[in-house]
Image (cartoon, rainbow, N blue to C red; front, side, top):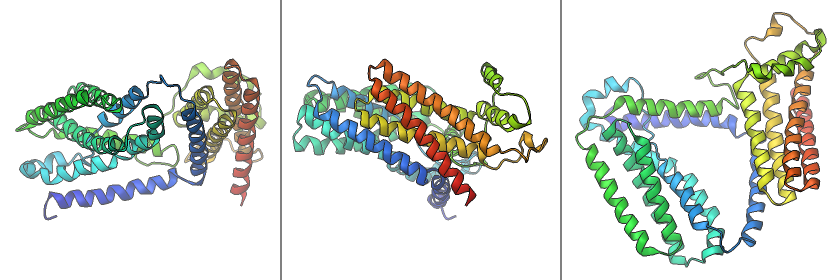
Length: 401
């Protein structure tokens, strides 16, 4: 390597290849269908809501909170490794050759969420405030500049404090962005300019605090390791990741479920798949999260068609991932000790998926019934169960082929 800039370039190439290798298992055809249905349902509900949005709706505050969170959360992506604390130490005076492109990558890699939020917010902003074109063009430019300011400020604060009280810095930047966006959207430009002046002063003060401070290798390496761990945990929901191991918990408070399984060789696989499902963090929490999301979505979405599409999409996601998770090849299972070849494990998984999806359907229907829409509740109940049955049936046929 000629310099640290070359080290960064090589490391970034390897990082991008690794992320792409895992993402191809995440965004498969199944997930694409789920996303298509979910985005379609959300878009339909949002367009209908915008047409009848109440005049007094606090749209400016909503946007301020959203952009405050998206911009204030700006952790630097440094791609540092544990060995760098030793090998980079003699090169600390030249470390900017590595960190400057790292901060630029952090900026561009975190832009997609603010951009999506801005594009989605335009119909609501126009309906509520009717901002002129000059303000609508100026807002995204200012948001991009604020994102870069957040990236630089968070990095400088972490360097100055070695990671201590990073939450306090984020809180300050969140409040600053919140006030600026709120004043700007409400066309109170004088106050927006004053807040922008405070933002500039704070950024310069934090940067000055970091001048001359030794680089906190330990903190930034730990930050990078935790970031990659979260990515691996996310990817592990869709494919096996060798970097992490799935966690298992007894969850004795759910032992009553096993009482409904009759003892005997015919139900041995059924008992084992239930134990696997309940004790596996990945599968159990996956189902709990998706069930909670479909219940909340059913409660908030005001249109029956959108509720049905949304419920179908998440029912598909739940069924396919539980089915694949319980049928994937494992190094060891309890039935390897007591071979039960004359009984069908796939049939046991089928029964489990049908039961848990029926529970998901019943909970969603209960939420809708409490909301006073019994017909929509019955429709959601039928849609979730039907989509789950079709999903598992199609998966079984594909596996046989």
